[in-house]
Length: 270
Image 1 (cartoon, rainbow, N blue to C red):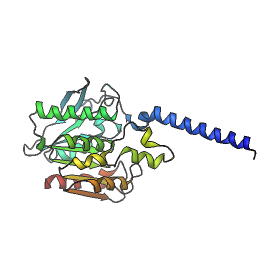
Image 2 (tube, helix red, strand yellow):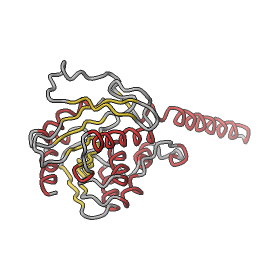
Image 3 (cartoon, helix red, strand yellow):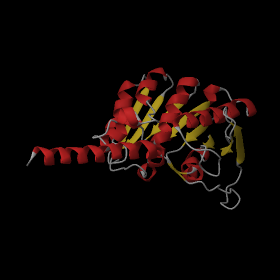
């Protein structure tokens, strides 16, 4: 092979690599967030005893989620920050397990999801979460210690950040991760992910400032977020903390394997 031909191949490879970098950088948020933008109708869905949680974010967006007050006044409210796909109504079946035990549930919905305006970003999701928590505290006169923060998948990053800002009763993380950078490195290890990624959700750095009782639940067959990333986060967390490894469970079927039973046991403990 001549030097000229070798240089040609090197240039082609370099061009392909640069194009891959550009594609990943400019399309990364569409690869991270998969919102169902349709607005759920509680009447059409047969959902009863729901209050529309209409909140205002610090950057001027009006968002809506669903709030179910506790049927047992001694039980806290669970604020659920869902994962990167679908919308909040798709988590209604999870909420029902806790509502049946007297807990309140706030299904918080992000910007760009479930009929809400805006486009999801890491900082945007934090603003949304603060708006819902502040709504509970002001409109419903809810003290921090009567709130349980529950994060699912990408929502665990939101939950961890909020737990550093609010002195909540407890924190539950379903299918958590150390950072979205670590997730992306497992898939795109040939790219400089740390430099490229805009929304890094650095939970492993934030978890040091969380002091509420903590539960992590993860399936050992999860190929979307490897359980090792959840354990990395757990190892960095403060006590009291509990890790539940659910055998044979994947990323989206933890409740089929009884995740709610472990969560209810944890809630009753605290």
